[in-house]
Image 1 (tube, rainbow, N blue to C red):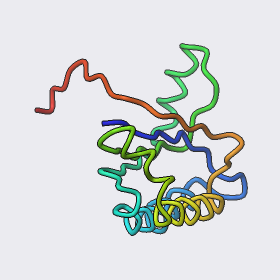
Image 2 (image 1 turned 120 degrees about the vertical axis):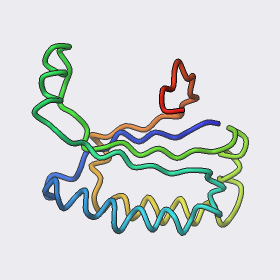
Image 3 (image 1 turned 180 degrees about the vertical axis):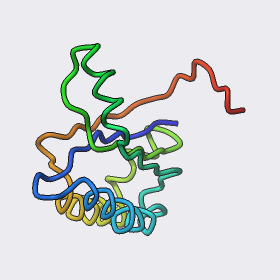
Length: 125
């Protein structure tokens, strides 16, 4: 499995609450409608919480400000993921999602990258 990871910062004119509400209740369901067209296996939003505790961890490491959240989209393989660009449905989905993302994401101060997981341990199983 491979995944596309979005480290997201909200648009400055949005409050933290408004950002999280829109992302969860508007954008999340929109992503779900395109899951088949994108051939995505999984989509998860991780919303930043407990900023006071996070600040302690960041200061101890000399890190910059936090992101407002992380979104992850999983595909079965890199080939499945890249095939998205070869279909009209996939391109339509990508355009619609990017247009919606522009309503709540500060693209210039966010990041996106492709990863492959290497599980070191999993105590939830």
